[in-house]
Length: 231
Image 1 (cartoon, rainbow, N blue to C red):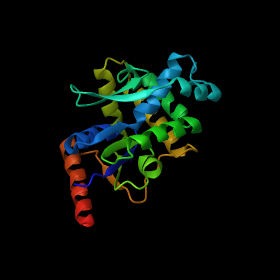
Image 2: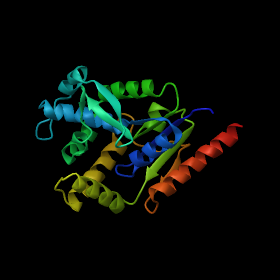
Image 3: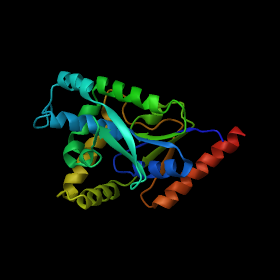
């Protein structure tokens, strides 16, 4: 059976990672959370004091890239890969609101994007990969056989993210989370380097009223249709 590349783009907290993980598990594909890579770079800069009070020197961030080694290690309990920063599992640390508030600022830096995209392309060079992010279908894998663009109602996205953060013990409010999502939407869509846009051949998946099983069935049907077209 021919292995393909599946690119999933979309706004924050639309469930991109959830559906991408489920697809990878069902198909036996590699799953790569590209957003986790930018979050790990941001976490590194926060820990090193490069980001202070929301401000940073771009040249310091670029220099710090030489000290960053990213890997993904499969976690049997989670049935997905955890993100490792210089040998440390940082999967929990990169999901905080503090990192979320800064990651869009770090991800607009050209040198950061160039290094992350190079890693992403290397991971997907042999096909059989499901990758989610903001520019996967438009920049990282423009020739992907299947491209999905995910979206959902803003308040629904906010509530999902709020539930996720509170489940991890973070004390945040609905208003705080919504502002973060809207700010990130704007920054991701208006950045100079590979902004968040829907690829012309991407299929929109609005999951405002769909559960995970319904979303998975939707994408699996698209995959079967692609195979029939090739036949």
